[in-house]
Image 1 (cartoon, helix red, strand yellow):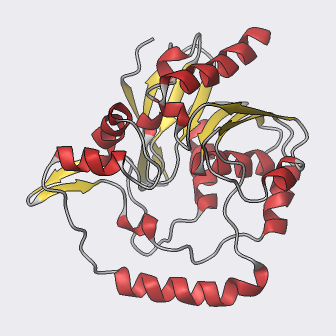
Image 2 (cartoon, rainbow, N blue to C red):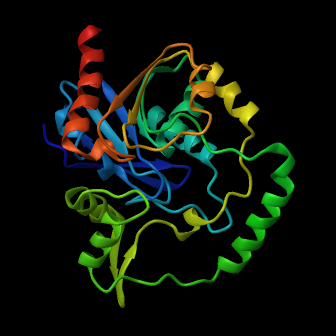
Image 3 (cartoon, rainbow, N blue to C red):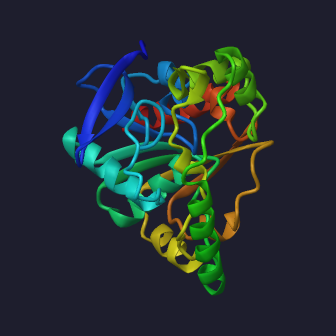
Length: 284
């Protein structure tokens, strides 16, 4: 299966880019990447899917997609609206979504908001968004607003070369292989006059002005009616309140596969995840 078709969607006057594989008439699965990644995060999984039209999005502010207006903070729930708009453009009545990390959280919020519209979720190293404790929200909002003011005109420091950007991604907070880094950098970096910059909107690294509380998040999880496969890396993250949150989802199976937070970019785990997707369609 080829995995090189580029798609573009217009959402509220902004462009959302995507990579696609499979035949146009095949059943669609959407791919949602993690924070500061892009659609190339599914380069290992996409070619392994059979009889599926797999469409991996660059979420707003990432990859080849547009950035949000400078006055608009990045709230995770705005991605839910974006994904629904893309699904409407594709005329999808029922959604099937693979989501990694932040992408998994977006998928869960969407499935809780529109339970009748989401048929299946494959969540990788993520269940639901980070939260703010209700009693700390005022001070955290003040801290975030102050930091945004200080960072507003700060200029990013470029990498001298593409190779140095690749090495930086290999050794980032969540390490990846050289091949995985090159895939991510291919959509995530751009040459400027004085070096190589990340395409990602710098505003993505600012602290959130507002987050949900745990009670609010769990309300979304309890409304999910879709079948859910949760894939965790054996060396992955310790997810916040994982057992408590998992208990909120009516139909969920947990799998533990070899690898770290980006296990889906490694051949062994990618095949195991692809087998979950292929197996679900074979049973239909």
